[in-house]
Amino acid sequence: MIVGHDDATRVEWEAQLHDRRTDRRSNETGDPFVNGVSRRGFGRLTAAAAGGLALAACASPAEHTEVGAPEAPRLTPPAAPQHALGPVKQIAAGDLDVGYAEAGPAGGQPVILLHGWPYDIHSYADVSAILAAQGFRVIVPYLRGFGTTRFRSADTARNGQQAALAHDVMALMDALQIPNAVLAGYDWGGRTANVVAALWPQRCRGLVAVSGYIVVNLVANLEPLPPVAEQGWWYQYYFATARGAAGYRRNTRDFNRLIWRNASPLWHFDEATYDLTASAFDNPDHADVVIHNYRWRLSLAPGESRYDDDERRLAAKPAITVPTITIGSDFDGPGKDGHAYRSLYTGPYQHRVLDGIGHDVPQEAPQAFASAVSDVTRS
Image (tube, rainbow, N blue to C red; front, side, top):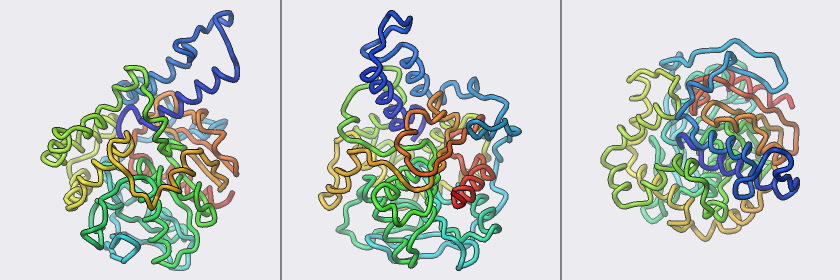
């Protein structure tokens, strides 16, 4: 996802609606409502929806701020990873033959790091090295449709819905004989980690989730948002058209480079860094999975019936009970304070804010991300 983070924005919007229903404030407070949402809250929402359109103006002197803690020195996102991932391995796991990198001792606490779109496992090159040096067993898989991960059958739907990706993680853990693991991710990976933690908490030792609780709610996604918020969803509407699907297939690398720049305007990555990831988009199923993911979110493409029960459970917004650290960055706009989703995490919990950092948090702030992973294991 890019600026106007759809699910984080909708969580913020729903939080404002909840405030309106439970507080019943009115003009007499000096905070009049616009369509049932406070003007002050509306400003927070629309600013968050605009996201990275003005990220430079959002930057503050702190790079890593734990809520309630002193500000830490600001760090500049590195132009390139300082470490290389190990060789990519392959393993049959459920519907997929999964490509993954591994680091650290085989007997260490397992950590599974999940990337987003349009990124890949190289988001975790530095994080993986840091955690491996601390004794963690680190697994970094390519998601379906990326890199060397392949569908094992031509008959399997090229499905990008959230439950399918969560089952992929469960199948990978089973194949690797990992009973439980710390799950950490951002964007698609953050959503997937949230889903696993919500549906199968016994398999999740701890959770690190950038942008918090971004689980998709299909019914909520049918409701329109204010125009300035809808603007942030442009790429989803583009993908909803035949022209958009054709355009993404034809211009995948240029399209995704634009996403990188818009989502992380303060990250001056070099072309070699982008090229490391861009090769993952050459996966023969990449465009199919991406287009399905975004059309499914808007109920323009069906999911698979085998996941219907999971999606029904997720639609109820199940609380996440495992130890969790959420991370907000400039990409999340004013919503990066985590207020909108705080109540959905009921176990040991911290929220951290990374000012001056965009969407690819583990690659832009690897030490802060790795610290969150190691800290959540102590909860």
